[in-house]
Image (cartoon, rainbow, N blue to C red):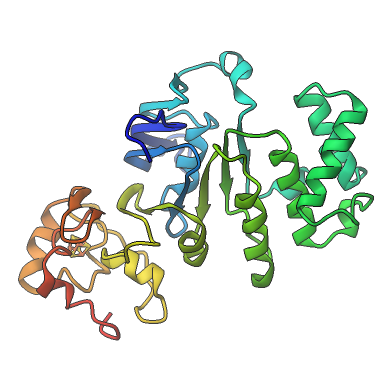
Length: 325
Ligand code: SF4
């Protein structure tokens, strides 16, 4: 990627805090820090995966990118346009190229519309196409997604994978500049997930970007140019999994659950949030882990950014041996 290329998405130091009401009107309100100081870029043609367990902040961040949630602090630019702080009316003329696929996208399918009608109506309404052109384009997109023989099928007559493809066809037919997809394979059988992701990523316009929110580490490894591992609202590792293996203890547990025990999810509110579960921050090394929050920084020894006090030390790294976690 060229350093001069204007990013499709530029997110700087995003914070998001939700204030939850107490159980009773007189109970104190609770502050939940969903996203803490996250920055990221998505370049043209790039797929960036946000991975992490439930509650890590990845869905909230993905919604903030498209203005579906307002950040508490920080800045978002889409193709150079400052996006946060705009009203929906101000965003409306610019919104069409930036598409969101929610986890429950299938529930948005009209039970009375067949696949062809669902896609062609989207094109007529959002791209102002005449009926014949919209039908032709919808039919072509459904064929690209392997649904050429299912254009007349209603949602109840389709499999889960077919329904998902119709939702993808509606978004891809709009020729998006950016697709933010939140767990696009959730609810599908494992053997269907791979082909749905192939349909999504393989049919993006050439210069489009994609933010893929997933807890499926295999999908992130296979489809993303860059992976941001999130824990407790922060990015704790950022890497290209096709070139490097993860080194942060939490990432290694996520990406190789057969070798390491899965994190219990117990987080510390001081120091490194992963310290209660971490097999590396033990003994003498535990003090700094418990006291100081590690910065996300470029480690020359591994060639990517990691937030851990000890992963750069080879002897410490050896503590996270398979079977010891
Ligand atoms: S900073 Fe310490 S507790 Fe946190 S991941 Fe690294 S070794 Fe583990």
